[in-house]
Image 1: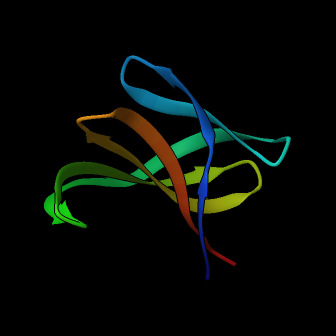
Image 2: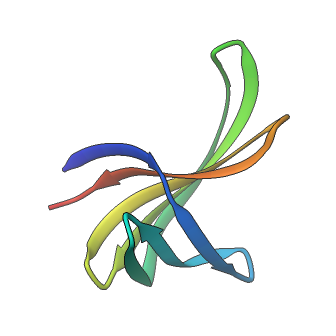
Length: 81
């Protein structure tokens, strides 16, 4: 497992990630194997993160969508070997 924590672009269909784009690499989602929500205070601000563990055509990854006062961002959290 590699910890990445890098911004990614995510194409979403009906609320679910279907494509992840990271470093000009396109990963198609084959299966959502798990998802969960974390609501906490991160660095003195309220933030909600929705995590997705995904099986893609290049391997298993974990991404999250964070929502705070500034808006929505997607992050690639981990890549599994």
